[in-house]
Image 1: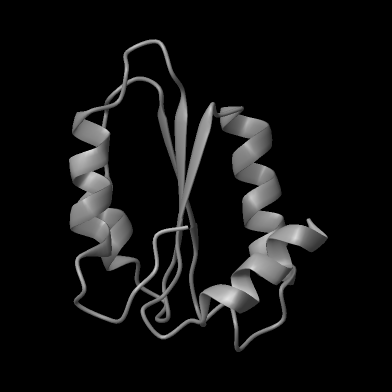
Image 2: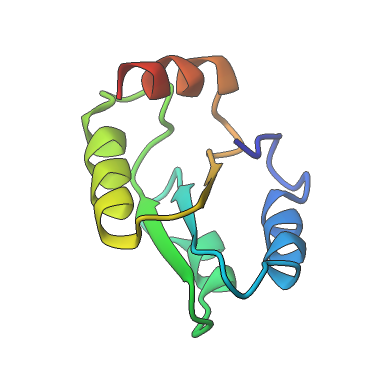
Length: 105
């Protein structure tokens, strides 16, 4: 979970980590956007093999029903079968709520 307030550099950190991905690993990134338009996902769009991108838009994970997050996470994990998963919650979110939802998944 890569969390922090709006503008903290979460997406930049993920981009930096992607540059260091071992060629033999599959990675997945699940991004939570507060708005309906996924700006961070657009910044991370990549054609690189071994990287799958999922998005849960339309609300902060800690403020809305966890169903969209659970569905998005399940879909991404089934599709990508990643060795490593990064989750970037909205800058408005609270990591403790996200961790609680992950425990329920």
